[in-house]
Length: 295
Image (cartoon, rainbow, N blue to C red; front, top):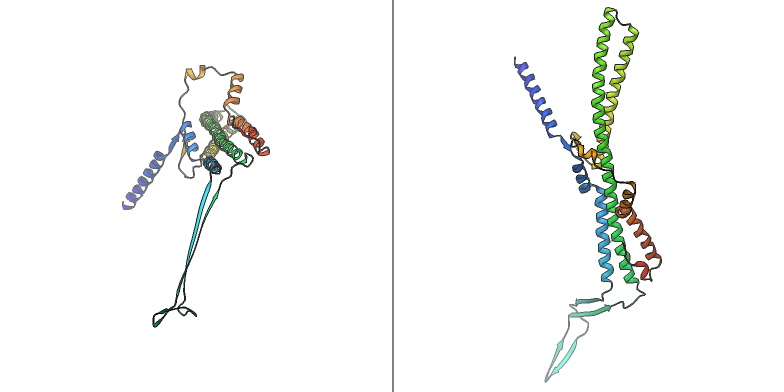
């Protein structure tokens, strides 16, 4: 009786642990996945740091236009307890001797520097650094767009795979019922064993389809977790709002409008334009017109 109670208690504890594990599993929406990735992705963080470094380069190049002033000083002291010579002073009938055992020495200096004109290289350097800041910002935006596109693709694949698992499981349930019915027909002589073998093969094929769909679903979830850089072993799942008739009936933009919007807003286009200007600025550094920021 005691062993029975202990086994029951163990089963209850295991059930509670399993329930708490499923209860703690988080279900992610598409917006939550995107927000988390934008806030924690390492590549985006590196791009932001690169932008901050470029901003500091701009400040440093702007500071180079100002004059500089520096001062230096040094002090030294030496002590000799047994000097080889000293000074003698006659005071009336007395002769006084003075021996210096401590020596002091010091030096002072002031240095000023100001570049009045160096062929506008310093100002062109400022313009070049500003272009670098813009490029760093666009690199970060480009990485963010690519990351969002990858997340959206995997999110849709997960939703599709979840539906595929449900469909295959329903198909498998139907195949099992059909196989069971076929076995009954074989017993009463209404179906041959060859036909039953076909039903069994179909049931096995449906089982394989279920396993394959579950494997694809798990792989897509793994890819999305890797993209979000989630390292824990927590159960991961996604959810999406139910589609409405308004969503289905909403108008699709034309190809021309999509292309025009891409030319206007895609960071890759702006980054390429800034790359051209940066190359011109580097190759023609003394010329001011080649380094003006126009994007």
